[in-house]
Length: 388
Ligand code: ATP
Ligand code: MG
Image 1 (cartoon, rainbow, N blue to C red):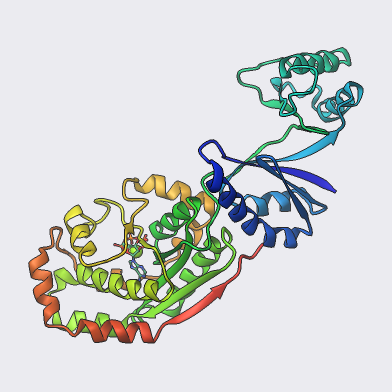
Image 2 (cartoon, rainbow, N blue to C red; image 1 turned 60 degrees about the vertical axis):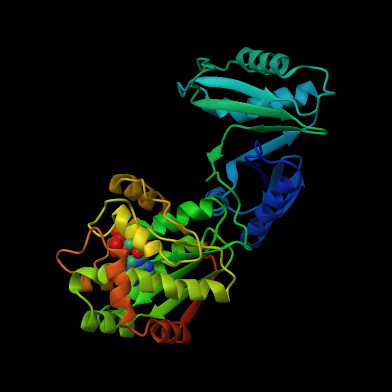
């Protein structure tokens, strides 16, 4: 079995927080291990995983765990200098002639080990160069680093370190309603909050027949990508047609976007109430489109009892696209299905909505009934993380 070391960022974690953090991490790890046919062991400040699965599959699957700073295939031996040297040579000798810049770095969590980490670094480096190793040393910017760690009973060694997502492990008890449209921004917004430990419950407002089923399938595909980062995902699909029809019939065109967003917030709030959700997330980015001004955001926030998080609010489109490409939502988001908003949106939406005016318009609508009906007709699609 190959072993892997899973490192997590523990610098800011103390006492009870660390315990919860590790519990959440393990909860996300478990179903992934059953796909990999592996086992785990919690060591001091790190996790050790053992599995026979192919390394690229292990990497793809473990890389979906937020809270991990890095992952390494590791090799172990005892504390005996001869076997430590032999393992070091076994790991680095294959790189002879590659011209890479090289460094040896190590730690000694076991303080009873008689040599310091610095001494060990020198001993290991001297030994491999005596055996004919030929890579130039560069301690500051190495391309290849042999890392060792003198543990309580064993010595761990690795030459590979895959970067993890970082952030915090997903806590299944904190539920966040992600307003997920088929666009580029909201999936990225959702991912960024997952990275901070948020368990997502995406909510999609579907407006058939104005939005085709392809648009809904696209949102399901996006939710599937995000589902890979958590253990279980409920995607809620709201039929928004009646609400949109009412708004289009009874309200001034330039206010449609604001009014529809306020109704989305009301419906989403009700869904969160049912599921004891903590917050809502949107993909709004300040100034990206005429409707996303700070004045409009203020009017959208009005009366919403939950925090509305906008993790991409300060990002440029290029930054959002970079993340979308990295997490694999980009190719799905750019598929050409119009969402209801592009169909219903007027040429010139208000950029500075007046709260008074919007409230006056709403007072002529039976908001309560519209919201209740939308919530009553909710479709919930349950997704489990899928791994190849
Ligand atoms: P996105 O790229 O996420 O679609 P956008 O730039 O197209 O965002 P808008 O259409 O103004 O921006 O929507 C702003 C936010 O409102 C979206 O990011 C999303 O969170 C939410 N939203 C808009 N339409 C829908 C919808 N049909 N279902 C769910 N959420 C929606
Ligand atoms: Mg959109």
